[in-house]
Image: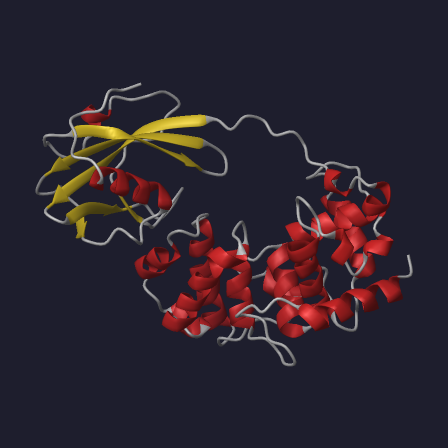
Length: 344
């Protein structure tokens, strides 16, 4: 491969048709706070889904100093719907270190960024390259797919990651590392898609070993996943007129620090949810919901009642800021007033 020609071809394509993203600055230096915020939000999340959250965060907390002094509960509520809620806790921890220890200025090197709470190798490389134009090798899922197909990397993920990173490093343009990182990500998102890649539009198709062999969709090779374990529990929707009783979850653990509905523990076997209700009331089982977390699937029996609350109840008319799993339960309860549904 003629690496210099490859770089020119990709960057010419990027310059002519890069995605318009709210955190992307053309012809100037990007705001490190905005870049960092976007990269944290985009982990395990698509651009269309993350964009309104990014805009809302910037509206409410325009600088890292503003975010650093924000109320934890408000930030967690604003994050609701993005999932992977440990990211929101790390977001606050990082903002407070940047504001408190660095005078509100992000470190401009990978090493300095890696020292911040919750900033891993990928985020550090992305912020260093995109915000500071540092030579850093940015390898996300899009870049992994591009590299795997270019070189027909047969090693399955995740074992292949080190090889993919090394290959990506060989290609990185040291003259424009920030643009290069974004060009590779755009190529994976717009052209080298997981299914039905648009090879006829690819600016670097002539160098792609996968396309030459006609098996580009076989890459990257993935390890066969084991079945996701299932857990069970019960969730309680206690109403008082048009209000719903919420609780603030423990700051640690899954959905830590978030507002949610009262639940039982989540166990490997079904529990009798009625015995664990948070308060005595005329509880009715109205159905069940399914939710998938990273490491397990969850089935929750949904119980509904009218009542006056319990110790620690937070009454709210607005459920829109709840995590998705609880929002599903509220919506189910709102659409039914039927007697107890039969248990399967």
